[in-house]
Length: 499
View (tube, rainbow, N blue to C red):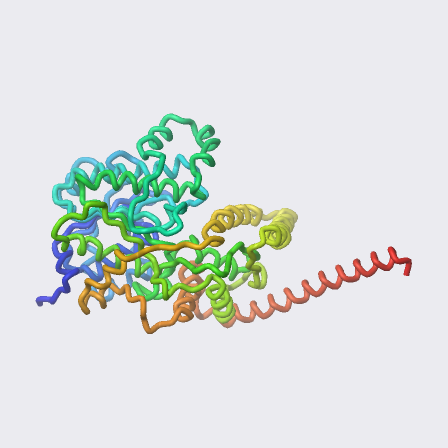
């Protein structure tokens, strides 16, 4: 039976796609979207390294068991057979490919999505350079050998040019050269490199944005000889619609804050509630990525500068962090997490002293107390270790939550404008949907419960009861603490006055 293809689907017909980072959050969604909506493609090749004793083929089988691939199993199960997986790693030359595997990739690939990266904002510089900068060079080295390459899409981040007041869709110059940093990381020992990292990073807050900025320069320098394109998503949030509403599989960004606060583990955060939230649902970002090669193919002549897409939410859809947090709290109380550490009623402030006092009292003190009790009971201690990770994460995130960001996203907007009605349905990036922001946040909260915490919707009655008990316990403890403090203060004043 002949199936009518939309223009974007027609573009992908008989194409071979090569993806690095397909096992990551965005990589999984991209793989699923290509298989589901671009069903006339020829093949999708992904690379994956063994992990925890599991071969790449085993990891792929486990990936296909995730809920996001269910609609493919139900409607287009034959598409799963179009995925080829090779053992590979961006930390190896030629991505770890060799022999027939390398030959197959270089002779058949039409489109590359380079998405592999380390997202550890607090990671050391050597690892960031190896994955994000050298990894990009290795991917480009393989792409140079591709005989039918039409587009190489490099996934960057909208925050890599944080020294700019307004971030336009262009590559910004930087005093450091990618080649110099790659050589530096090769010969300098880790201890010395760590010592000079703070000075190297300025004005960047972490190794992630720094290495991503250098990778953009590296990609830009290949534009004359290769069809390279740069895509910069902002903070990627759970899916709005596809493959399932609220899908998320990591604790990065706002999702980690939402889960941590919902569990009562995060009790204080530095956030300027007046600033606008810069998030983009993962399906909106992935739909944009899918359309980019199609738009590039329509150009009569190559643009003078490398194409750059700031994949960010439309300005009229952005809300202040304060509004988002209040909505999230309200919805979080309706869909609470199970077995939280404490009642989820954390403090949002811009005052660092206030925040540090809260962290000491409500983060570190309970963590040490819990570990002390576990020590007495002969159990394995973990809470201080968890709190260390939370502390580092919050320290890094506050750079993004305490300042305003301004992006120009005309190129990303143009992707939606060139689509016909069929493609707008297939690759939704509509910034004026019928669904409201509270409806989206509700799906994010439910997605965090179901997909991250593995908490079934059937557990909600029990979780709501636990929340009520936690509320009572919270109020009783606060009353006792305040009462004791008042009694102590009264006694001290009475003694001073001789009453």
